[in-house]
Image (cartoon, rainbow, N blue to C red; front, side, top):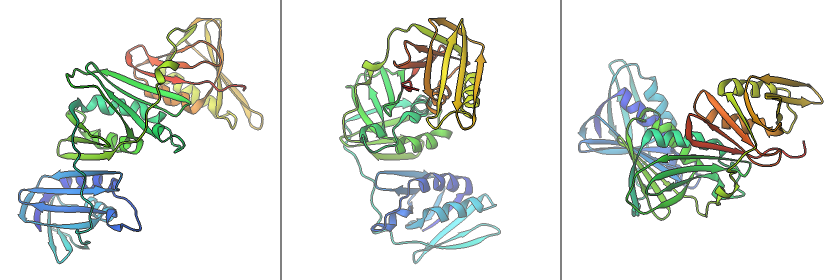
Length: 365
């Protein structure tokens, strides 16, 4: 192998691929990045057996070849280079990395044991605006369950029909749902994408949010293609719960509050919350209050300027869950709608009807 490439192109590729490497004592090769020059294409591949990525790197191929390189080391090494043009040559399983002022030799590993990325038999294929997809994932991801007790809740529910795309997540205590318009003539399809895959998609799409992303869904796997980046992931087995029945349709009380002010005051009040992470949101005579109390530390009570409608209310929430929902909602103002101190509350933005966040109160506090 012998190639010439820019530092920036190599850096971007190895930053992405290193995140997809894995640790496996019986298959240590997956801690490496498969680096290949083939005719006019340079590519980096990594997998942890649950998900994998292939990144095509622009550059000049002088001689074909391939080698497996330790992911963390090659990523750190490329980032440390000062010059823009990088010369890489492989010989006898080792690569030499040269610039005008630096010369590194890095021992690689044999590529014969490196697992190939699976090629799925596509059953559904469609393109989605990457910005909508990334924003939707970012808004619902905090609600994904971190427990393995219910594996289907450890992923993000994805549904495409002829008019909309729905992205949702829940951990049984809160639910986040994003629904945005999407025109398609294909059959409806739904699946559960692992939460870790969604995290990597958000990070990978951060610089590419202006393009479309091509999605292919197979029987047990899903792939995403965007601007020279190919990501493949397994899907979570199981059936996602029908969450729509728990979402209230009518409410007796509404709070309309400047979003950033409310986030700041929730976090301020939470400093004195108990071990339950509880705060109390209440209304009285058209005003809104946030309270917290800890018998060992102290208590707090904060009044907010708000537009409160309906009957007075006093409800306890987990402040972390409430803050997640407020931060996920877009817009300058946020609307909190309730019926009682035991029924689900809905957080949304009047400026963005595509997103809603449903939060269960804490009972008996």
